[in-house]
Length: 311
Image (tube, rainbow, N blue to C red; front, side, top):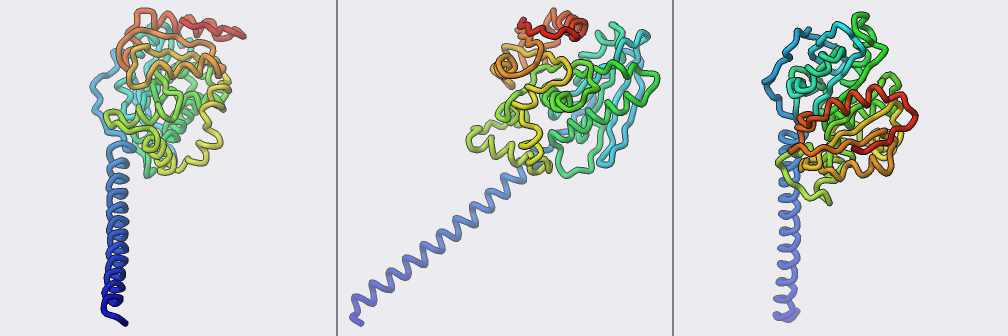
C-alpha cells in the first residue's frame, strides 16, 4: 500500500478512535452529572426539611398519635365546648402543624374541635417510605378522618378540612373520592403540576419545560404513585369531581403559587366559590380582615345547590 494511503488510513483510524473515546467520556460525564443532580433533588427538594415547632396552640390541647403501616402521624387535638364539628388542618410541603396554628383559635372560639397533624415525613410524624409524596398527604388526611370517626368525644358527623398549598390539593384528591368530608376550604392551592413543582422547589428555579416536568415526574415515580397519579389523580378530573362543597381562597399577590391558579376553578371545576384576597405572600390569606367571614359564611351555606360566587 502506498505510504500516503497508509498515513491517511492511520489518521482516519486515530480520528475515529478519538471520536469514540470523546463520546464515551461525554457519556460518562452525563451519567455522573445526572446521578449528582438526582441525589441533590432527592435530598434537597423531594425530602422536606424537618422544621422546628415555633408556635403552639393557645388553647388546651391533647397530643394524638395514629399508627399506620408505613409510619406514625402525630398531631394536636383542641376541643371546643360546643363541638359543632371537627376541623382538620393540613399544612403544605415542607411545613408542619405548628404553621397551621394561625387558623386554630377562631375555629375553636366558634365552636369547632380542631385537629392539626404533621403529614407523614413532616414535623414529628415518621414515615418508613423511601420518599414523601402526594400520597403521603392523602394517606395522612384519610387516616386522620378515620381517627376522628373512631372518637366518640368528637363531632364525627361534621368533618371539615382546611388545607394550605399542597395540603389543599391533597385534600381535594380525598374530597373527590371520600364522602365523609362535610366541606373543604383550600388556601393558596396549586392547581397544575407546574405550580406544584414551583411550590415544592421553593428557592430552586427550574424551567418547567423540560426540567420542571421531569422534576414532577421523578417525584411521582420516586413516591411510587406515578401511574396512580396519571390514572386517578388527574387534576382536571379531581377539580371537577369534588363530592362535598369546596371553596378556594387565594391571594392576588401570591408569587409562589400565582393567582392564575384559580382560573381553572372558575371555568372548569365544581368548586362552589373562589375568593380572592389582597394579602401579600403565600401564607397570609388568613390575615385578610374578611377571611373568617368568608369561611363561616361558606360553612353555613354549603348545603345550597349552587353558590358559584367570586369575591
